[in-house]
Image (cartoon, rainbow, N blue to C red; front, side, top):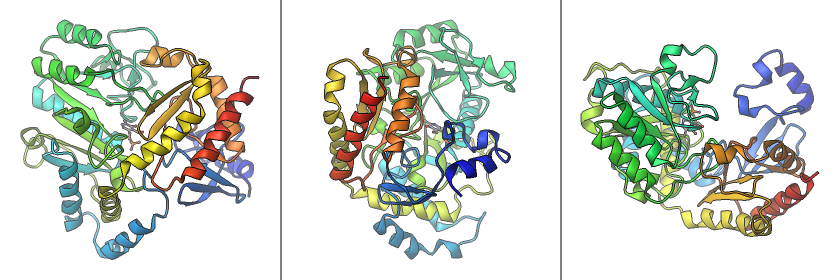
Length: 420
Ligand SMILES: Cc1ncc(COP(=O)(O)O)c(C=O)c1O
């Protein structure tokens, strides 16, 4: 069956035929069946250079031989499920070595779960109710975080999905990213009521938006001056730029950190962790409840461990250089103000606007229709980018310079073709 035929079947099984909204695009999503290295293969056997890499999780590429042989050594299939195992200790030690602010942690099965538990914990620890999140910051799809102010700077978040009780929307304040004065004003207005601020260090779910110099340090400072916890959501950025978190690049010291994606090596994972005195409030030591049948499951622990072992000696400069190739090839379009290309090391996204993209509002200025036409051109030419303007693209260790050049040339064609 080809993709169109599979989609016809899927439409009756899943809403819009997919299991996560961003996987849907018209006329139908391409259905894939195999992945190897930096390539993914669709059901018709067509090959694509992949710059989505499982939304960043597959930084080490698909079928990476070093990782696979390491996983086999661990024989995780003989480890029972739902019991403590040494694998979880080994992975936790590796994570703590890379990100020392995580003194104690709990594994979950997704980033969504991890942010949900971290927010509950922050509320319990501080005895306060309100949370600040950034406009267009993404922390998964549970009720506490699926809230966005829309294009206006509303003070209280409006639930962005029907089904979220209004009362929950009112516990989430929305701030403008890269705008410290906006966040300060919220702390002034809701003095002694804010439990925590949660932020992605680099916004990765509104395209790619980087923090201005000193911005995150300032956020951390005003949280602490106001008795609120600083929660850094490193689901995308953890172990993406080195054997560390983004926090270690800027010398941040968050109270709680969220991880996911890369640390599971392609299997479902999330993690929340941080200061011991806060984490000790988790049950059964403390009163804050959190649990999961599949938490720290042996398959994920083994795959994550093997992936981190690989990343420990990986040359992260390599993937930055590979990404620079794309930026350099597309430079004429940037110079001509036809596109903005936001890059941070091995992550990038293209916006069809001539003006700097640094927050929600400026990202909205991009011509997202043109982006989809660009995306579809690239798809047709065998380059799989993240399927949406408000996503981010990733370069991984199995991308070769030749493949990256080919892909960048296709992107050039896509920019030209999407003009009409
Ligand atoms: C920054 C961030 N936080 C949380 C999540 C949610 O993670 P998951 O999709 O594993 O639930 C995502 C997912 O893309 C993310 O990018």
